[in-house]
Image (tube, rainbow, N blue to C red):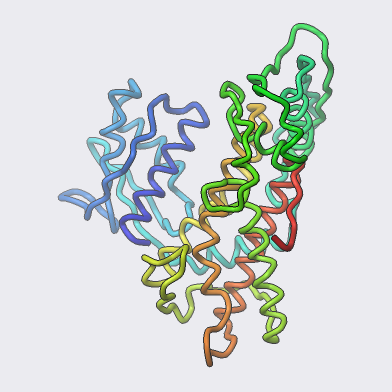
Length: 344
């Protein structure tokens, strides 16, 4: 993991702590990671807890301990130690075991990966107004609650307890999938944009990126079958090589920096599903799917052999990880009620 990737990993830990209500702070634009100073340990250290302590209204050591819990177990992170006055000291690990375990779990559970029992045997009442956005949000929440073992009951009686900001106009002309995304992607307190931007097949359209990433994972599986090899979980960094220029990875020098954000996003999927259901916020799942898509797209050019290269154990492992990412994307879109086509 490079310092830049570790910085992003630290910021994701801050964002998770904020999402779960453990910290009430703005997520900073960057987290500085350096080599540990005197009294430190591990590969890198960050003073992010000292930076956030005052706005959080908590002692630096307490902030550091909160962040340590979110960093520990993250893909590529072997250990996190807190030292005074509030430094996080991070030891990095090989990504191979994490990739193997996570890939096997996702492929074994399929689109049920991330489903749990956080709301087991609970009935969640969703009382909504007669409004198209409220209906769509409640429909998505019904599936999310069921995925966590609960049951949602939707009706229109007062007092209303789920009232997302209505759409400014009828989303139906966008078509069913784009209309649902337009209504679900913004947080409930934000007004959705009902524009043709949701239909444009370009990188600046989040829905397109998610569906395109899913379709690309299916395409590499078909291409691998044509080359005579199939997915097999293993070490995707084996035989690490320069990937070369590509629209999604022009700056990449090797595979290792691409693995950490992908593994972290996939490992975070169960937590996101549980929070989306518990907080009645399908927008959290929608944004998470964009994170997964943006992490897998730069990785895909390394899946298939290039030129005279023969399929190897590394290619089979990369294919398995790509298929796992596609499984998460397809499963997440299904929970939102959006189609995940194999061809796009």
